[in-house]
Length: 195
Image 1 (cartoon, rainbow, N blue to C red):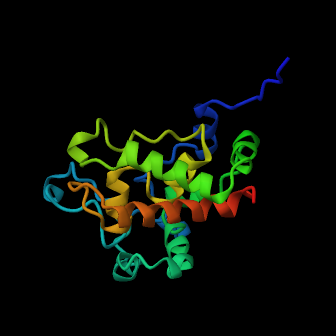
Image 2: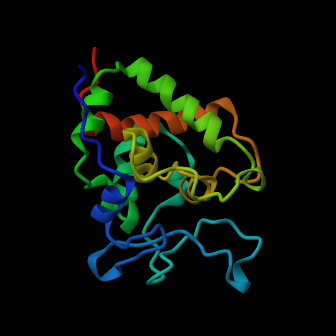
């Protein structure tokens, strides 16, 4: 007889995050938002990235430094990601035990392959080819999904916002590998992968 693991539903993860969305800001707490709302009239045709916080208008992130995609600068990436309200909440979320257990059964190479597969299948399409871009990555079920939300790699909007990769183009292998390493950064901080 197999023991059933008590897995929380997506709503339990969502409940832990409260009413936050990727457009939430709490500027008074130094938690901002850099995702431009393209539904607004003056924003149509622009990038999803706002160079300043959409809540208070402050220039907080050195986007030129982010655009270099230098993985040796990963501490700066994490520092910046944590300045956005939504990402800050996910970085500080307690990982459910079932996710920790599942992830710890994998070594780094196995996890890397899983991340590449998810990015290739769910994300590496032109925005126009993705049904409901912004909703293709669940908030729970797998640590990889939480990592994607924490690192701004959950949809083409967020990838364009954070990494300047055009949402209307297919990503190249270099982009996929870079985003994979960003996602693995979160996972390695949260769980010990098998050797």
